[in-house]
Image (cartoon, rainbow, N blue to C red; front, top):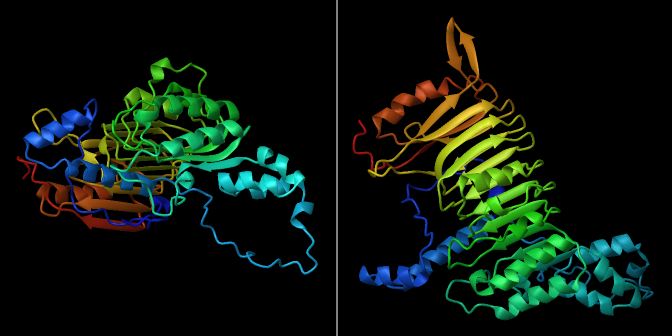
Length: 425
């Protein structure tokens, strides 16, 4: 699987072929799951294979660390200064601290041995901590897989790095540990980050369990500007203090998370400057109610989509759903998801819509030739995913297109016919 960030993907890359919806694995122990598989005649190794695929999806979506131990050193080798004068150390402290903050944590700490002047710089520079860099190979072989030994020495190294630096931390990427085995460390890490300050936090739990709950201390990290969470259950917001908020958070990514409607709504409400929201592979149904004067981009993929209600989002420019999956009723029949567009005057990109599965509601009404029509005049780029063998889906397309009178670019992706529609004409 290519290791790339979704923001670097083409604007409208075609979604893959129809896939079975992932089932949430909430409250199920590993032993129970393995026993169920054995009763069904399945190999236990199949479970590890499935989780490794899940982790690779998560690793593919989360932002890459801004520092690398394998970065090229163009000035390596003989000194480029013929007189041998150390001109780097003559730079102002602010410039040197900026240099140190762009080094991996171990290399940044080693700068203290260069000269007496550098010893204080390491403590004053915002540090970048990436747990994969504490692996023996520095993370060169890629992310760890399920079944690999739990890197206890890595967990201990992260604890030492966070404890030894006074903060703040420029970025902290924690993706290598099975956090169920390190619950004490998890709580202490969040306490330290909340107290010392962190700008960017990427926190992934290597399952199992799939629904390990994050401590409410997460909401004390008020300095966060970017937050990505992978394979967690969101904190119980009922236990979060009323004043808790993310006043500086601009980008939020939730990957294979378990979240109650109220918890997701709480996070969005307490993020007053949030601009980018990404939800990938949620383990439970997604119901979004967007009331935000800062949000500009919403991306959903591999998620169970139930409802999106854009109530008031004056800065929203992109609403993009990619390989979203509808919910099923108790009878097994697929329920249509609802997308409601209210006040979103800057919404220019919308997709992928499925005329057969998505119910579109538009509150903006205009009079055209004596009749009322609901339109979204701001949309310039639209994408459809259509099951061309389903007559009802085809019949809805012309009516749906009339809602976008200023459309300039239309993308249409053919999808396989879903056989779970027993009564579809």
